Length: 114
Length: 111
Image 1 (cartoon, chains in turn orange, red):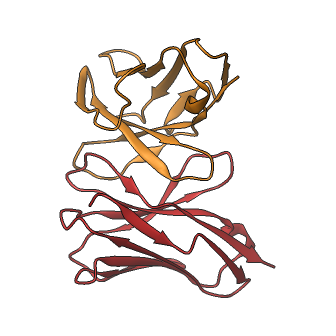
Image 2: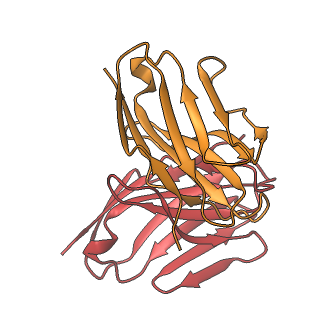
Image 3: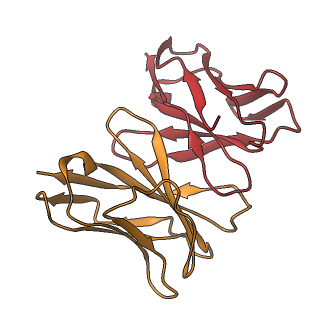
């Protein structure tokens, strides 16, 4: 019973490049959440998606960041024109239903911007 | 109003002792309070969770105490072991839409 999968686990990008992070939810889960963790800080909510729908993106920066969860395939978090301040661990979580509350996290993608 | 305040920031306990981590919240709409355990380089793992209709929940060595009137909840780790050394996060949620996390507590259990 595979858990939440994220890839790549580590990603290095130069300033100005694009970063694309992938998340495959647990089997049977149709709700995906993205969180960002800066060094020595807690996790901050970014976006909540269901298949083909963005439910809540109030935690997403207004520019350069976007997320999708297509009908087929993994959820994608895209960061365009990365800056050094984007360096962080990005975690994806999934739940069976939006109101089931139990969110299970993946291992994260560590993004380093040089 | 969306914040969850967690203390202490770090905690050192001797093996066999009790570890206690506290959290406080403001938003009375929160109705789900989980605790997560995170090891270095890993994702947070759901440890135990409680809803406000109960005052205490116990799972093995881990207990959540919940005080609705004070808007506070705490995690107690009994018989703490070196393997419990990790960062612990409290969180709060309502409507299953998003988790609001505390700042984290780095627990070290000395042998």
